[in-house]
Length: 400
Image (tube, rainbow, N blue to C red; front, side, top):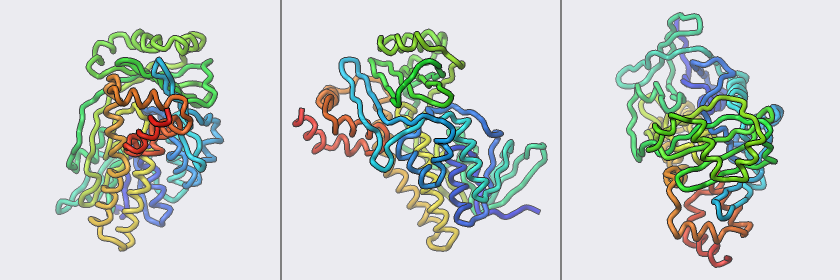
């Protein structure tokens, strides 16, 4: 006899576990499944910008992260070669960012979902999304011991990433798509202190960034245009180090450090998927993905979880019909991320900024408010639409 859940969440990482947790806290019966056994690593920028940290605080989980020893980041520095913009990425209420290892962050979120009352099944492989009369009604899969399992729910939530099995099954509308623009590889270094800084270096058709993470390590990621991906893959380490050498002062710091892990890398497409349909919803990268250069993924997943859980609560409670509640989720998600999506895709080309943008960045140099706003814009604390608004551009250039 199969159980009847209110929601089955497929995928238990940064989008799935928070969605399950928030629904369970509202009293709903939630099942969350994942192929992995946690703690488990995954490809990631690691960056949790201040508004993502603020979400952890709202959920009562921030102290759990800080207790793991992950160092806070209060400064974002952007080195353009001839000048740098250095600012604070957060707000008074959410002043810092973190760069947690996913083995630690994801395990923390999975545990929080279980402690909130969601049923968590690890090492579970979903094989089929069940439909009746065109509506998703459950899943079939295999549990850890290999036994076949069928579960039913009012809604199936796909939180299973870019290669979402749920999204493939429901075939959502896709729009505003762009191909992979950038390829990047990262690894971890010891002996590379960062003093609370997230540093980004922008050069012609090359870029790299560094941020402190757990266990005294620093994550350093280097990238190049996707058109050069195949050639660069032939010598990942060599091309990675050549990119670092474009910033001699940082390269000298790196020569005194020790690489502690293999290189990991990826190139990702950019897209929006309609995040809901009859009996299903999508959160996180399953519903929307952008290049990793602005590190928005974890924060976006958290915000999706909140928006989707609120919409499903309205549906489950009878406050709104499914279509009305979920179309509201869709509109809110796109409105929040569209300007950052466009900015990210432009940045990911690694093309030199147009002259007017170079002039703006040069004018911001040395202007504390403008540099803070630039850092906050890159962190998603303020929208690129606000930073590049004509009145703001005029104020920055006039002050210079």
